[in-house]
Length: 330
Image (cartoon, rainbow, N blue to C red; front, side):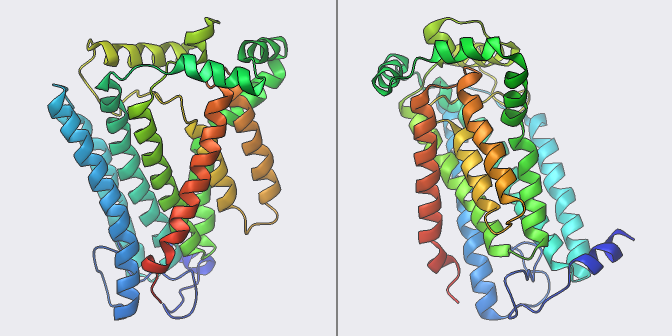
């Protein structure tokens, strides 16, 4: 009955008719028939994302071997199983021609595969042992006229505001599936594909910076009290850097990257994904502005990190846009 309801909400369109069509289960695995030009277009977008996923896995694997780390094989079962299950669901709805819902699921699988492998890469990258750049970030903040302990102290005096900002900080995990579902079901397939590609590009720029310029974060520099999540973060990062932690996995992982602030990058990309929804965009702008503010009030990031996160978002959008002509030759 679910597919019947979705069929009423998501009209099947011909591939030559509009932006919302999606003729195959995966763009890189062909189920059904598609015109040659359409297949080429689908193949190029998916091929680029598959390359990013493969490079992420390969780099993580190389660092695991190089640094004597270990990834528990059992921890690969759940993400592989979930991707497999979603693939079966895509096949089911593809057979019934519900193309928009298939587009949502396809982007979800690609993003799931990427983020799982990326988390492992982030943990392996933390073992490279590059010098910390916190002192430089403190000086940059001072040059900007920002003193983070004062912001954190103000936050502590306004617990209700802090709680709201903390809720917004955590909202990115919930906003993302909303984007995948809402934009996909609206038929904006290329906008959906662009968001996923922007996310992947931004993540790779972020990890390259992290490999070169790791940092503990403001609480490490200023010594103000940390919460439970920040304690876990410090424990994970420091144990990876000193070699006492050799197991890398996505389970119970924390974000280890200080600069650039990926929460800022992520918030900008989500806001842009809602740009065609005039009734949602104001809410997205307000919510994600709170996300950016919360990176400072929570003490997770220097102001310099936030600026860097905004730059990474702009670069990733520009690179994804520049590739559109190649990804969609029609």
